[in-house]
Image (cartoon, rainbow, N blue to C red; front, side, top):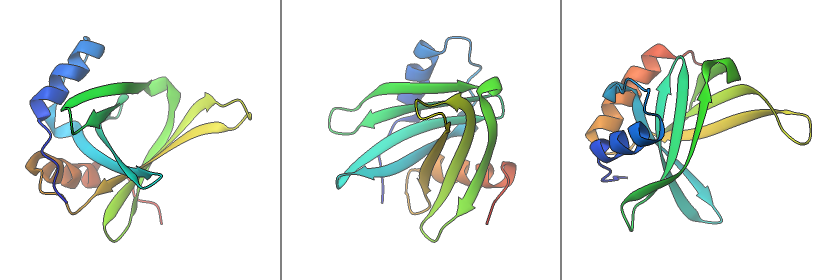
Length: 132
């Protein structure tokens, strides 16, 4: 599965939304999810102190719906290895309406020919712990 997403466009988008960020290109990956058989593509920026996600609209080549968490909002981040993807789990301190903590779950595809995603996913797998 290949997505032709410009890392430079993502960098421009994230630095517009988060001007204080010291962007490091090795901390970006692609997440893929499915909602009602529709694929949803997100670009993620994952740092020990900061998490940022933005939805990518491939047909029109733009980003929207950004979401970020600061270090104080993140309880822990870890990975779960699957056959075709690596699942990123982020447990937060944010409380939802039902009084449970917000937990983000994102699939990071292993079968992707976007060079920067493949390279950065390998790096991420060395930095975050795995959970069985």
